[in-house]
Image (cartoon, rainbow, N blue to C red; front, top):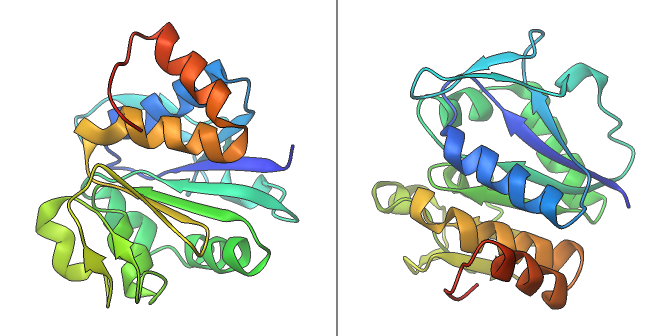
Length: 186
């Protein structure tokens, strides 16, 4: 499988990040956590230390299957303001990979015009930062241009299960959902 990366910035919403990593790894999807700075140690929005697997300057960006952007404040701002992150977003979408963003992070994609003309979701107070997208408020939206948006921490499980479905298949996502006794839609 090609590379799946989850970006970590200081101020990240730790649950949105770690639920995605946990569930993808349960599905036997190799996902690498990537600090967007030189130091792999991240401090989350709720002052929890997270040690990333690697740092952004050391990843193989030759073929990214999926780039995942968790939300949180000021994590989303830190992701948005990173030129390295902006380059990875462009490279991923231009090379045919998937982008996934949850909570405030879809605003980064909205700011780039990547959501224009599509249905998208985000944390409600960021609904006006999705460019020319139609805000739905749904837990998860899959756009036809290989972008997945998630609403907020409360949607982290269905968001992550949808990523498993995209990267593997619906059966694997259902097995993971069953293993954690998740009974909702995804």
